[in-house]
Image (cartoon, rainbow, N blue to C red; front, side, top):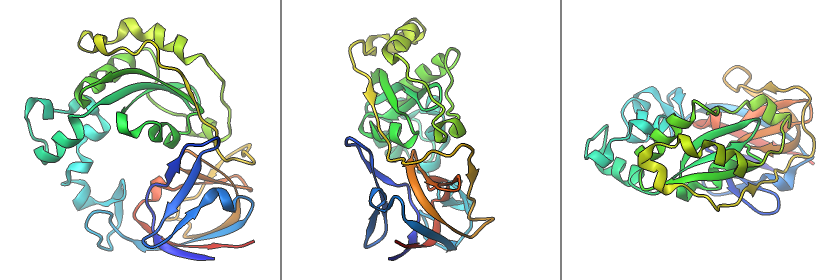
Length: 265
């Protein structure tokens, strides 16, 4: 089977085991169904996810011009504490920023490699946790806007990491922890403005990924440097494909790359 199209973040569905989908313009691949099969990936060209021109991808699937101008790539996206829509202050497009920022956001703990703190829109749970490869996660606070979530995350970063060790996550070098207990330890450090939104009773969510073989050591596939690769697919975790030879491919890191995929038997 042959597929061709521009790469975007894999879609997911949480069941007993996370279901992963690569979506193309008129088709899709359920990656769970092709575990154990040989697949080849061939890089053809770039296509910016915003302007759709054949321009080299700079970041997040966008060319440099788009990344530097569109509201979807504003600084507040990566640094939510910089959000200003609640003050009626525009960054790049106030209408877009109000839609994105002035909605319920969650600050959470996720365990992908070690415990980390993070921020996401309420509507993105559990998708955000899956994308980070978290095998367990729990909410800390649910606040009405992105700014409050951002200042809460900043305050808690003094006591817990905000980064995922992706190599440990992909080799499954992880521990199971009591995240409710970890959440309680952080309660006193939540900013006063967000204290009333503390979630004391939410239960921990457990996530199982479709991985049949974890690599002992990972080597990354960069299509910009190695435009063709072939290997046996052994698992999918976070936004990575995991192959039998230890190669891992970050799908999200290649958004905007037009590729051809061939699936063997």
